[in-house]
Length: 324
Image (tube, rainbow, N blue to C red; front, side, top):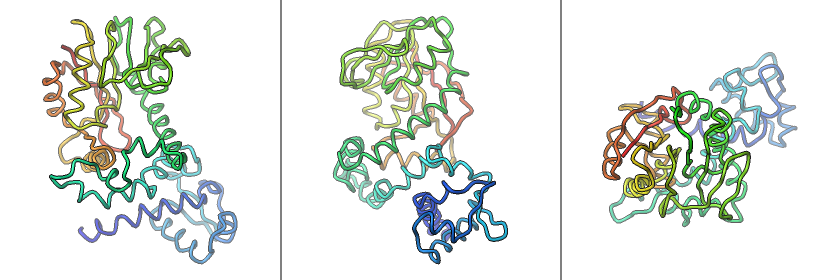
C-alpha cells in the first residue's frame, strides 16, 4: 500500500504529459492513430512517446487495435480541449499547482500562516493568476470554473427552494451564470449579483451586477441570498466574517443558501480536496458540524440541507440553508 501511494504521482504526471502533447485531440474511441502518426502530429520522439502511450494503455486511458491507439470510452472527453476533465488536468496538474505541494510540509509550521502556494510562488493565488506572465493559467482556471458552474447549475436549479422568493442576491457570483439560470427558470425573481467589478452597476440579460466586497458590506433588502463555492476559499475566521456580513444584510425572514461541499468521515476524495484548498488558499472544506459552528458565531443557524447528488473533484455538493 505504501509503495502504491509513493508512486501514484507517476500516473498524474504521465497523464498531464499525455494531454499536454495534444495527442488526445487526434484520438477518439472510433478514430485511432499509429504511434508513427501521433509522433509526427505531436512533434515528439517516437520511441520515447511510444513508452508513454503504452503506460496510458496500461491505465485504460487508451486501447489498442492492431497497430492503432484509441481513447477508451471512459476517457473520450480528453479529445475535447474544453472538457471538464481536460481543463481539470491542465490546471491542477500544471507545474504551478504541482510545485506548491513541495512547500506543504513547510506551510504546516506554527510560525507560518501562508499557504503552500504563496510560499512556493511568493504571491497569493489570485494575485499570481492576474500577473501578466500567467495569462494562460488564468484562462485555464476561469474556463474550469465556468465549466464547473455550468455543470452544477442544473443540479442547483432542481433542488434550491425558491417558491415565494421575489428578490435574490448572488454573493461573489462572478459572471452571473447561476443568477441568469435562476432568472430563466423563475422569471418573476429579481436577480442581482455582487462581486468585485470595474464598474458600479450594470445590467445584462435581466440580471443586475453590483460592485462590492463581501468583507465590507452586503446590500440588504433581499428575500434570498446565495453564496456558492466561496466559503471554502477562506479559513474559519474569514468565513465567519463573510457570514456575519450576510447576517447583517438579511431581514428577519430572509434566507441564505450556502452552496458548498459537505465532507463525510473517511471520504478520501473529499479529504484530499480539502488539502488542495489549504495548499492554494489556506481554504477549507467542512463537515456539517463545522458549518454549524461558524454559522452560530455569525448569528445564523442551519435550518435545512439539500443534497445535490452531485460531485466533481471532491465530496458531495449541498445547498445549506441558513436563517437568523
